[in-house]
Image (tube, rainbow, N blue to C red):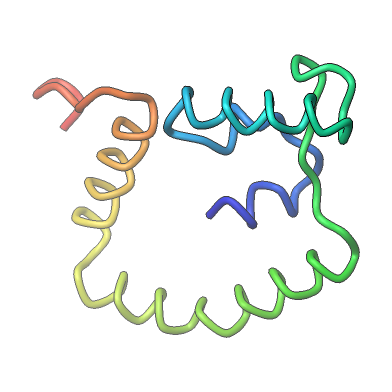
Length: 98
């Protein structure tokens, strides 16, 4: 999921992380090592080769994912995606979201 997000363009490390303190530690290390001058302006992106690999992986797993989604039905897939979105936002869906 992280690679797919980065394959769509440069993103901030915060957008790629569900653990802010780990992101802060990594950014601080990059600044200290001289890799970047300002952790607040740090972005992550893939190389052309990285984008090619992510595309290849996506094409390989998409049919199996589609098969599994088809097997559990649209309502359950929607519920799964809603729950994942809530989880990534740091919360849980309330009964009104279901």
